[in-house]
Image (cartoon, rainbow, N blue to C red; front, side):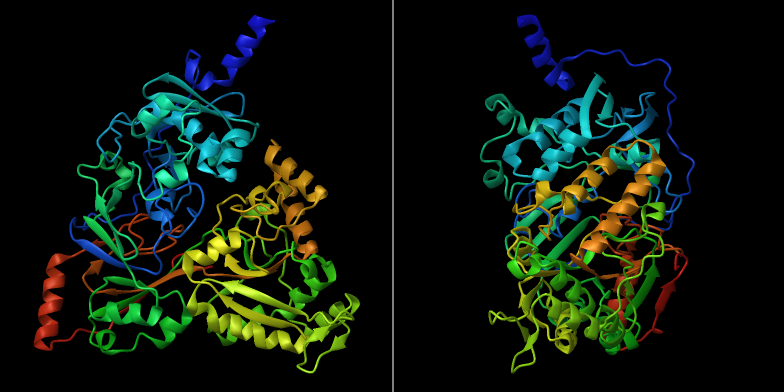
Length: 604
């Protein structure tokens, strides 16, 4: 019995202790033949000055308050083992130079790039991937999603030598799904945590959240966190002699030497700073900015140019999330009434110039056969909504036109949103809802504080869109494990045993066609539950930039989310000579032709 217990205990730590021979019959793939998507005209150098609308509440990439906008600059765009080519969508090398699929349909073998280094010049080794499991499985990081994914999706990491590993998934699946689960995994810097791994039984400090709140870890990406002025600015510095340039797909990318983010919360004030030349680019995704704020002198004189480029990104879940833990929202008829009383289509047309598109259902789109066929978001029907509200007991009309029930409870819900520029959108929904006897009040909570408010499940209705991958994710948003728990993405607090079963079946299904069928069934169940009013999608990147910012002729890729995001595709550069020319022209009163570029190569 003792021997069995010892073997069982050792098996729990197999990713650190077991010596296994590398299979000899593997077929290694390196895929070095996909087309490049940067320009050989690119120039290195300069500081890109960008606006940050809110200062991050932490520089941690896991744990409380970490799921904010700035995380993409320090974590989400860090190299994984492989990545998808942004146009062909084929897998291409990143931290791994080559890979091979195991015969068990749940293991992938990787040969790490031996030149890969952390930003503090330490080498990346297999041990950093072993430590990845320690890191993400630790309860001390206070990240339930990470704990679950790295335990119930990722089974093990096996080391063969310093630069050869295998990663095993818990469940069997097809190759593309398997790589999607495993290929994007990033290591954690074991050397950075060496002192705590020696002192703590689980390898992570009990006070991790507090101790590392503003202590950034080394990165394998092209940029690392440099100077931080809390509440004011953050500067990212380019890693000297970055190892990634040995990868052909990184050539002529990540061209600026520094990226300085300065906090300006108000959009109009940020535009004024931009037009004074204090920022190099500014996003104009919002129709009110593109259509109403880009006809001033710097645009007319050609100093500032405009860019509108279309993409074909998968869209995540989004819209108006209803917190079913709130008493009135636990009523299915009330929720269905809200669906028909929320005029998203009118808002898109009248407030957003028709630039955005409506999501066909609340769980996103662009996932191919994973998506519900012929789905169409419900139209605005206030009369139908009113009948549903009456059946739910709200059959009386108050003196202000808002429905109430026999208890005197008013049909009123607060919409929480995080950006001032969304105010006209929410205000439009509020006015239209009155036609059904429904009151929406407006609860504006600034920036990252709004997302924290939603994570803590304090909202009634959340005006929120989430990012999405090529394959839909459901567990984090809809499984009861995450309902009524803070710091999880189940913003609706919805719980259904039938839905739970379907989500687990989806997660564990090996047969691809069955998995896609489960996905469609989940989307239908969520649609029928009426817990999210389907929102909108933005199928483009739209920006203004000073004319010294340059980019390739075919600037957009199929997967370009933000054209001038310095850590994503990042195929633009600063032309110092053109900057000198422009500044001199402004001083002398010389002008250039106004420029608006429309890149519609990927317009659907």
